[in-house]
Length: 241
Length: 286
Image 1 (cartoon, chains in turn cyan, green):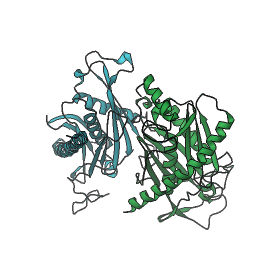
Image 2: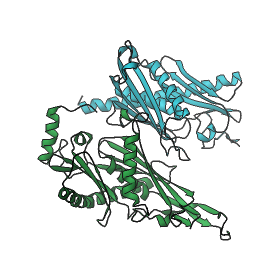
Image 3: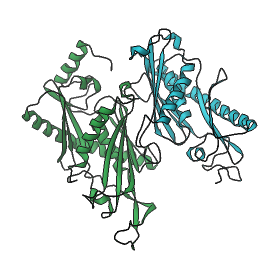
Image 4: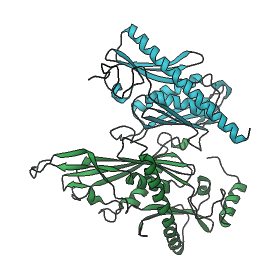
């Protein structure tokens, strides 16, 4: 099947190095300490952060840092065929672990010992790149909750089909059987904090594909910064500053 | 939820007794309702309803299936509600299961009628394609994104809006199918039938706090309730279902009074919902 036409257009009309449209909103769940919704094309996720608060399970309490927990769940209607079991399956558990480790690395947990930070991510619509959308949403939610972090964490995926590196795969491109590289970076510190790939790629091409994903991450970071700046201006305005 | 102090509890109860609630509403006033339709493009129909800080999403998916042997001329509808942990940290893992089951059963009771399918808000016979062999399976999925009380009403409203947004594809049945073969059905990609939602009821939950009942309770007010009765009323003013929750016993005359109050409130709610849904559909078309 042709994923990149001879003119260089993908199935949804994008260029190979073009990201899908990003849309983000902060403060969507009123009861949470911090929350955000993030959309990458048709993939829509909501993240809510509760914390720092008292540890619920005293056995897990750590005396020198905060406990970070994360749960990833997909809505029944998020995928094309209706899912029977929204959570608890192996893929959800793995993604929960990945998001937790990524966010834990950038939260300054030593500033909040003996406390717990819960990150809940809910996928409303899945069209490829859910992992990345979840990490981006979690970053925004943590910023909204005022939790101190080393840097933003942004994530983007890329792949390689029809001998072309492609940025930000959607579901059809993801299921094509080609490689799928997901990268998460700390943009200001310029460090890679998450790197996952499936299928196989020659090493020299892998460098190009990873670099493309990193560029995508930086574009997401710029967008997130704009959103946070806009949000702060709104907060100032409401305070009458 | 953070616990309430004695002073706050008294403030809530006192306010309700004097017809001025904590947010300034009267006892029988709903919070502002926002409806958005078509939020899930890959579903047959969907809607998102916000009542104050309560935020729920309902999606309707229609799939071809085989009817029940006991009701060969009726389609099937199943309702399932999921409570997302984003609404409450306690919904993590299996914590939200109990509430999900309670909400799912209450909605089924209100919208689907009895075991024989009689009196259902949704006309099940209209979902049958070939009697005994092929019918539409409607899966209604609700998701609670943010919870600030009155989940049942919000879910009922979301399901009503999602159903009015649902377009079921037209089906052509191959005429030359023999009696025991599975007939071929051709699902049209272009022609759609809009769902008929005039019979779908709305759910009104009346929460009793002290001696008075309130409509559309917030989570704080619900924590002070003695009992709650959820009544589903349709456009003709007929009661389609009733559920009582909460430990305190209620005098039968009070329940009859609550039912008449619910019928009175339902007229305003149905009108409000219809206008919001129409506005949302018009917005979506633009």
